[in-house]
View 1 (cartoon, rainbow, N blue to C red):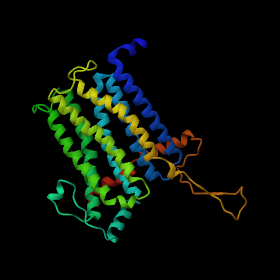
View 2: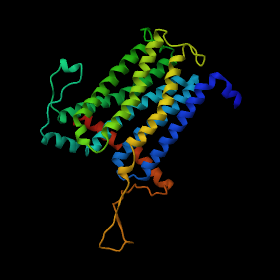
View 3: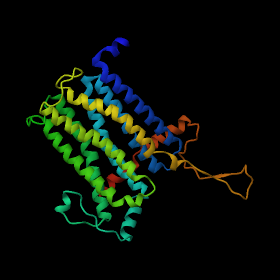
View 4: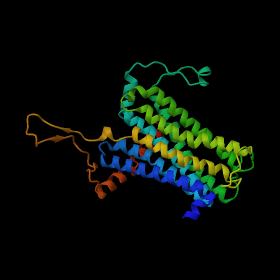
Length: 338
């Protein structure tokens, strides 16, 4: 073990592994906390799906550091999950406002000011009114990214197998440039839609820490997206430093994976505060008219786990989270234009 640590080439793997493992442990405990107080399954299932970003991002990045030959596949799995998590965060915001039907009723009955476009579109487009049609458009923009990103991941795997993917933004004969362009357009549409939706509806989520939740998801996406783009551009122009840990071809992905391992540890702490379980803990209600040993509690949903966390109930809550009936309904609504 001492010889392994002494080897300078193992430093990124050791440091990244330490951060990734602790980030994963903290996130898993937070997920179990939600499963132990599963009082609002529709909302908390989406929170858990978002929280799984940390273990997946951290562990895939760490494994990419220590198993360099598997790095392309592991990084693609990590990046594909961000589309799924981003869509679940959007549907979580809908749940925080009482669901999409409740939001539609609110937007149709309340008088709301016109919303201005963000810079630089504010100079090119007129302000617009926020209504059900606006929500539907944002919904579709988020959905396209959830579908397109895994599809791009599958295509990249095929290109990698055929040695037709490449690793330079300056090589138009390979798939790297074109897949990067498609991915950038898709995620830009999704991120702008998320920003518009948050800006238009944040007042309807007062008291639920919407800003903290929004900043958490934006930070993860910023670190995986813009940070990766900057590193790729620097690598294309040979502006990255020459490091002994990786070859010239591996330095870009190595730096990205190492940085994500460290960053996920800090974000796991932020998730603890922004996606906490305080508001989901059942509170006892004591009736002054009855003896002190007779207390009534808030009704518990069928999937609520007791404090002892029995395995069978944890498994039921996990199966509920993985059931995805909400996404299946979204697919039907989008398909039929609802």
